[in-house]
Amino acid sequence: MDTFASQSPVSEIVTLVREACAADTNIFGYGIWTHHIVEVVRFGKRLARLCGADEEVVELAALLHDYAAVKDESLYADHHIHGPLEAEKILITLGYAPEKIEAVKHCIATHRASVALQRQSIEAQCLADADAMAHIAQVPSLMRMVYVERGLDIDEGTRWVRAKLQRSWNKLSPLARQMIAEKYDAVLKILDAPSAA
Ligand SMILES: [Fe+2]
Ligand SMILES: [Fe+2]
Image (cartoon, rainbow, N blue to C red; front, top):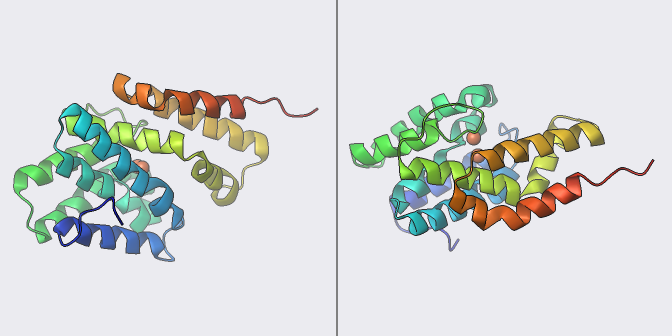
């Protein structure tokens, strides 16, 4: 996979997270790897380069930001709390420096739009942006969530996806908005299409 450096601790994390995504116990399906986490890493690294953020911290946080929820469904509601603890264990084992680990933990703790925690680093904003951008860029995976996992009907599912995308848009920085605006407008147009009466 081109996105990730090989022969490095990060490649071990890639393997760990990808395997957790492939496990039967992952309720989100393998698509959370292919259509979400990989996209968050891609957007996150791009943003980090543009903002002068620590690219390694953003990449590690992107890889691990939803890991707790993937590993254990019961941790989903508080995965911003469990995620930093999981990340800490993994990063200590792989020998990362304490300051890198703290930086990654802060990114994961503050990545959610629905959790009002102050982002105190440029890397945390990069991860929150990348997470939201991935939702906007990968609407089919949100569709899967509402229609397959939650079993909603067409209108309920559309409302849920629309609200999720609006929350994602609201948490974006001006730079991220600029990068994803065209796609966001296009998606909203589709979701607002009137149903045939
Ligand atoms: Fe998340
Ligand atoms: Fe996410």
